Amino acid sequence: MKVEHTHQEFSIDHLEMKPRSRLFQPTLIGAGTKDVEGLISYIVRIAAAHSVSPTRLLRKIYAVENPEIKEFLYPSFFNQYSSTVNGLGKYAELFVAHTESLTGAQSLALSTLLPLSDLLPSTGCGLLSDRPKWCPECIQEMPNIHKNSYRPLIWSLKLYRACTKHKQPLIDTCPHCDRVQPFIPRYPDLSRCAYCYQGLNVRVGENVEFSEFDYWVFAAAEDLIEHLDKLGQLASSDNFIMFLKKAIRHYSEGNRSKFCKSIGLNSWAMTGWLTKNEKPSLPQFLTICYGIDTLPSEMFLVPWNKVFIHQALRRIPEKIVDRAERPLLTSSQKAELYNLIKAVAADVNDHRPLVDIAKQLNHSSSCLKYWFPVECIRISEKYAAHKKETGIQNTQAAINKVSMIVDKLRERGEYVSNRKVNNHLLKEGKSLAKPALYKAFKSKLKM
Ligand SMILES: [Zn+2]
Ligand SMILES: [Zn+2]
Image 1 (cartoon, rainbow, N blue to C red):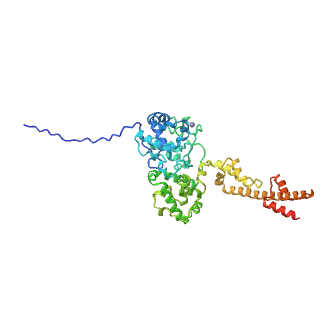
Image 2: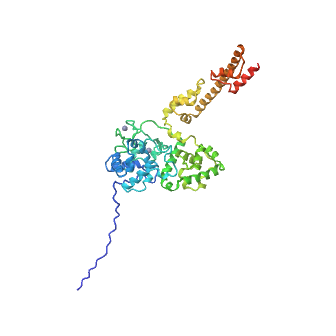
């Protein structure tokens, strides 16, 4: 008897094997949210996974495999320029490409500002902070929420000065040894100081006050970061210019300088964007968003008729760049400064200009104007009145001088010429070229 051998076909599900990568691929924390991790932080976490120092990882792996990276890994890169790895220029591009190829990760551009590179200039002012900042409360909570300490991309923005979750300022020096932290630390641990190795999860000092406008700027920055993915395709120079032209037509009947004036923007800047292919800096871009009362992403993601819903433009209360650079004041510093400036404003014998007073108090005049507008107006008025007064007094003294010179020449029996009188005046830094003096001279001659 013939035995039939049958065998069932069976199939094995193909196991999807990721291609082997040179380095461990951590999951990008907070992808697609305002808290998305920055690329520098991502690289530090790769180093942590391999238990090597981040600087060593860059020197021994990144630099060896990529001659272009090797070229600029000198000390100033680690101390200073490495901040731009999170930005939108050459370093960001190189590190995104190379980290992706070493780890097999994708879309790492979303851990940098590269999606905005067609909108903002790569060397723009007011974009990246020149030192790392962090929120101690966030650092404290991170291990519980994300199982890791990391630095969100948004902390690299110069304009982003407070944690909106904890309503506290971001800090930039170690609370224990007071040192500024490097962007790329020697130890792969972002929750500790790179020098004294104590925790950065501690806050020292008092509360700092932020204004409503500050919070608008923070919200606008969060909106940009949260929408990086979509903005990467839509936030182009061309779309920005199109939007701008529409807005100028809608709000100012096509009058550019009227539009700029209404929102507090220099009109020459706009001329550069419209005619010279220049790009707006982030502060300028946000000035327009604030003026129209829209969030940055809405400019590109929402139909125009839904963005232009307000009748009037609003003016920024103060230049955004100045705000980013102003030192933060604690409540007690502010009270102390207020007492000083109040006394100066009330002193009728103090006629100094605001700039001099600001210099003496170690603050910029824009800082004083922001916190103490009433006192600053009083100081400026006093200075202007004093200048006018001394101007009048000086002119009167000079007129008397002309009269004396003419008298003296006449006494000596000399001919009283313009030139002679003028020569005498020049010795005292005065001249008949000043109309008031010339007039006085002519009328003296008639006497
Ligand atoms: Zn926080
Ligand atoms: Zn320290």
